[in-house]
Structure formats: C-alpha cells, structure tokens
Image (tube, rainbow, N blue to C red; front, top):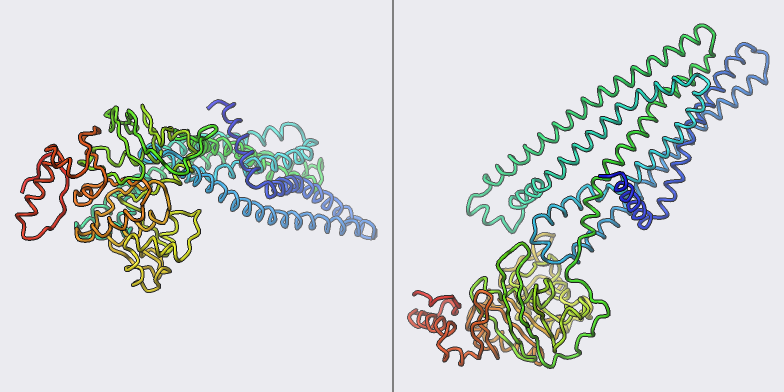
Length: 616
C-alpha cells in the first residue's frame, strides 16, 4: 500500500468513529492529552522534592526548607494519584466507546448484509470477505483510534521528558532512539506477516465453523448419528485446527524472539546511560535529584518512545484490516434503487410479462433463461411445472429483483420493474420459499413477520393460519400462538416438516400482496389435503395474481393456466385439459403417472413431471 492509501483509510476511520461516538471520542481525546502531560510534571516534581529533601537534611534548623519539602512531597504524591484516577477514567471512557462503536459497526455490517445482492451469498469470495469484515475488522477502526491516542499521549510525554533530558546532552536522546528503533522494525514486520496469514486462512476459519456446526447443530444431529459422521468431522476439524494453531504459534514464537532481541538492545542502551549519570553523581558533577530524574526519565522515556513507535507500527498494521471492512461496506449493488421511481400500480390490471429475458447466474457461462418470453395474466393462478433446473425458481428470484436479467425486462402492466422502488415492489409480492426459514420465535411472531408493516391483530393472524391449514396445529400447542417454535430456546416446541411449511404458508398469506409466489407449497402435504388447500388459496387470492411453482400435477391441474418449462425454454402453455389433449411432454408425463397410480393398490405419490415418461 502507498502512504497516501494509508492516509485515506485513516481519514475515513476517524470520520467513522466520530460519526458513531462523538461525545465519547471527545472525552477520550481530552483525557489522553492530560495523561500525556502528567508524567513529565510528576517527574519534575520528583526532582524538586529530592533536591529539596537533600538541602533540608543539610539544614535541619531551617523550618521553611522542611515545610517546602513536605509541600513538594504532597504535590508529587497528588500528581501520581491524579494520574491514576485519570487513567481509570480513560479506561472507562475507552471501554464505553468500544461498546457503542462495536454496536455501530455491527449495525453497518448487518445493514450491508441485508442490502447486498443475493448473488454475493452464492460466492465463496464474498463469504471470505464477510468473515474478515465481521471478525477483527470490526475492532480495528477503534484500535486505530487507540493507536493514534497512544501516539499523541506518548508524544506529549516524550516532549516533556526531552525538555528534562536536554541539559544532560544531546547524545542521551540518541541512545533513547537506538534502544527503541529495533522494536518498531520487528513490530512492523511481524504485524505484516500476521495479517497476510490472517487473510490467507479466512477460508480455513470458515471451514472450522462449518465442521463445528455439523458436529453441534440440531439440523445435522440426526444424519450425523445415522451415517456415523461424528468421527469423520471431528477428524477434519482437528486436522485443520491443528494446522491453523501451529501456524499461529509459529508466528507467536518468531514474534517473541524478535521482541527479546529488541528488549536486549533497549536494556543495553539504558544501562550505558544510567552508568554515565551514576559516574557524574559519584564525582559530584550532578545531584542525587539529577540521578533520580535521569533514571526515571530515561527508563520511562524508552518505554514512552517505544509506545510512540509501537503505536505507529500498530496503526499501519491495523490499517491493513480496514481494507477488508471498507471493501465489504463498499460492495456495489446491482439491484439498485431507481432515480425518480414510478409508483407501483394500485391494482395490477394486465399482468406480469417476462420479455425476452436472458439470465445466467454470476460465474456461470450457461444461461438459465435464454430469450425467454412468458406472460402471467392478472387475477389468475398460473402454475409453472418442469424438471429440476428448468428455471422455475429463477423466475421468482427475478420477479423479486434478487437478480436483474442480463438482457430483456420484466414488466408489470407494461412498466419495467426496475423503475419501481425496490421496497415497494417487494411489498407487493408475497413468497413461500421452497425451503422457508424456521424462526425460533412464537407462532404468532412467525406469522406476523410476513408483513412487519401490518397490524398483527389476533384476528388477522388466525385468519392467515386458517387459510394455510395451520390453525389446528397451533391451537394444540402448549401456549397456542404464544408458544415458541423450535428447540433452540427454553420451552420451545419442535414441529414436523409439514407443520413448519404450514406456518411459513400462513406467513406468506399474512402479507396481503397483489402477487403470490408459492414455490412447492404442497411438498409436505398428502394428496388428500391438496384439494382443500387449493380451494382456500383460490378464495384468499381472489383478484390477486398467483404463481405456483410445483412438480405436482395434482396441484398444477387446478390452476387457470399451466406453463411447462424445460432447460430455460417455454415448451407448452395451456389449461390442464388442453395440455393433456396436446400430447406433448406434459401429457406423456401425466399419462405415465396416471398409469402408475392406476396399477397401484393405492395412490401413494401425486404425479411428478419428468423430462421423459416415468418408468413403473
């Protein structure tokens, strides 16, 4: 990095800290200045006290000299006590400042994590950067402030010490510098080496978190036991942890060796200086007070100068971490807010049009959709069916602007959705994801978070639960809608996969949106419950535009319109009757599945579309 880059990062860090905690920062700077000046004053008072004591001892009958010595002694003690109290106050201020600032940085990272495009979450580079940003980078801006504070405090102390040492000769300052410079050089070198190691091992640390979660998280507990994976992942964790641990201990060993060499040089320089002043006192060329002052100033001066140089070194080292934090906060967004957004239609009249859309996921060469054209009429329920990888769920992600198409556009009533305010667009779309989140909160909260802007009345929550078929299971819970779902927290109640899906469906229904997108909404339901569920869904979404992404023909057949996708292309469109009569892919899959169902003693599994007729 160039020096100008360091200065830019320091400037941005200072502004960030000031914006986050201006009051605590002002108090901290004031206390640091006082702490910087007090040591010099204390040392000078010590010299005056010692010299006054020697004079008073040689003149025992002079009461004025004795009283002066007592006054100086009290004043010197008061300076030490004051410095100690101010040091405690400074520690408190720094701790409070760190707490507030840590929360501020965490909030910035959370905001960024919520705003970045979904594509970042599918990139390992992003996860490496996230690990670095939410790791030590959170504390580094404040560490830089403390480094600057230490440099300012120690510099003020050093200036006052230099004024006291100046009468003894300029070469004393040279010894002071010679004793401290090696420590700075070693610190800069070792900090740079550690930072390079820390960046290089970001992925290793993420793997350690991954292995640890498999061994300890409830979601993996059953499979770990069934497949006897415990030893496999313990071995992986321990092997990688051993590698990381040994590398870090090796760095600590080298750092310790370097510090030992630097300390030996510093002590050698200090020994020469103290021996010199001792000889002067011995030959009567300096007073005992001079010796006391010199010893304090020089011994403490080495530490102070070392503090200045170390503060500079730490500042440079911590700046390396800031690159990661600011790189994360500066990640560009593709799904950006439009300038001068167009109001979203109060009611969709025409429909949603995927117009000549081409889209490929970041880092992929093969497009998921290519010159894709699809129209979803307003007020209708449309089913999208196709094999895995056909592009069904991608349509949902594009409609929500989790991604923007590489070519073409998605229009609602003829308006490109990129012209709508992003939050307003998403506020008008309710989605049941194929693998919905299991929020470890009360049943009522699990439903209410579907629309945080709506008034979550008991009536509204119960209505959404009834429409999703979840009211019965919730009423049987120990505390009804107040029951904590999941087993992460005390008194939680675990649900089955189908029950979790019903709660997620209620969450989607609670959001009174104009567009409903349901991705495999009945995957956990039996075939007998599907018809009842679809009737309730049609009633709920009356007048809204519904999009069902499904493998099940028994649910797709009830939609107003069916689109068949294969490898990002639209193969067929029509009602169930029209598609069966058309004798295409849909019809062949339907007949094969119906043949299987007819030859079975009971209908076990609803028909699932496949790219070729299913074999019995």
